[in-house]
Image (cartoon, rainbow, N blue to C red):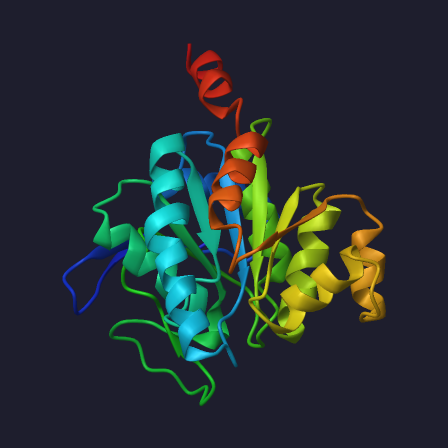
Length: 255
């Protein structure tokens, strides 16, 4: 495990960062960047590619008006892939827009991201999202290497408290991310109408023809579907229902 450090981004916001090399380092690493408190946790997976412009705006509004405020009101941690694109950008910007205080933790494979002030030789590497509060950089040089870490960090942060995954759009790596959340036993909300992987999962839940991977994931019984175009308020209710005991449990845990 490397020494923790602080990144300062062009927007003058800072994030606590640590790089880990193996699973055994993870609990101590989280503590060393200030994530000692056990919190109910929301894991975000997917993307925002090939979405119509009108739906893209609805999706951005969903983060500003529902997802970020719920995270703030319930006092939860949010975990995602940490790069400056798609839903990771949306949640980062939404957190700053509402002046929230919830931890926003990016989990990324070390070889896939561009770090401030550090040379990068990977032409496919992405910038880190500058509104996140913490980053855990994990082993790997390929997109998708972070998937098991993303799911397990969600579990480490929540421990016995509730957690939930939200799936938006997404491509091939999203199948891995959803599979890892299911393996962790985490309830998973699919935003139907957001496209690609999310829509395949929603189709399988309706009993329609779908990717075989979707059918197998639906069989877990952990997936729930919400139409992002019609049922935005229902999304808020479902998240609150899954995490409904979080405030009481958190108070008991800290007493």
